[in-house]
Image (cartoon, rainbow, N blue to C red; front, side, top):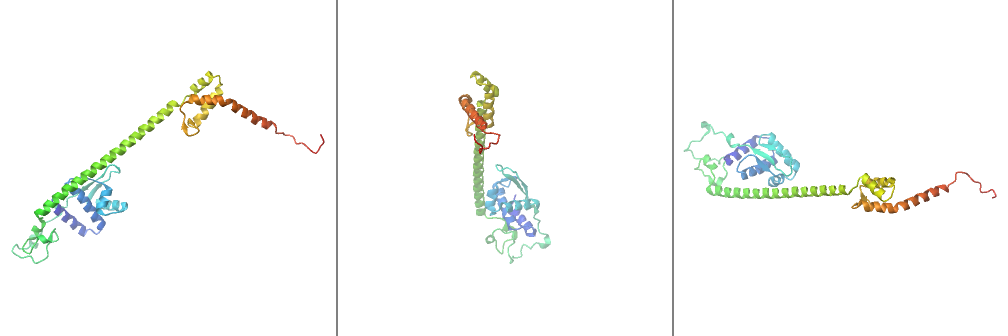
Length: 277
């Protein structure tokens, strides 16, 4: 693929396309750089932050809008991944084949000197002269080719490093998430094992000569608070908590009796204290 002819074909399409603006062109050139680093193989995987940095686009809304416009106008084929850990895919089309040769009537004679300006397709005007044909302006110098190859190799190396670092960070995040899930699951299983059943509580209270009603009160109370001591700490030994419950039962009964005795002091008859005793 001749990338010089490709860019020439692209800019010829841009020149006649009135729907595009400089932001579209900047975004396409950034995608072309990724395609160049991928040795012009489709599809290419892109990273939004990296493309926005190269294309100098600071708004995510503008980035997505221009990307969709280039897709709808046939400049690229955009395949979003909707996954933050997986890059979206973009396919770039080859525009070098769209260039058509000039008709014979429009070609200049070989012996006619060129006193006009060099064609717009020339990449480097310093490499052309009045005695050189327009077709030679498309051929870059050896130094240009060598510099381009060195630059491409560096870009490929940097892109590979970025991809490797991204994969390492992604794997580390996934590993931490799995470890947190395992810890949470193990903690939940441990807490469920420490929680007794109603039958176990009744049996334990009966062994300590306490009625079944107290066992039911104990079980209902701690189940309603999620088997937490003081409403914060998970219960470690429910039998020890049951022993404390049994010790405090007499206090509960005395408090209830005092409450009932206070009610008995209330009278329902109206007395006349002005009458003598």
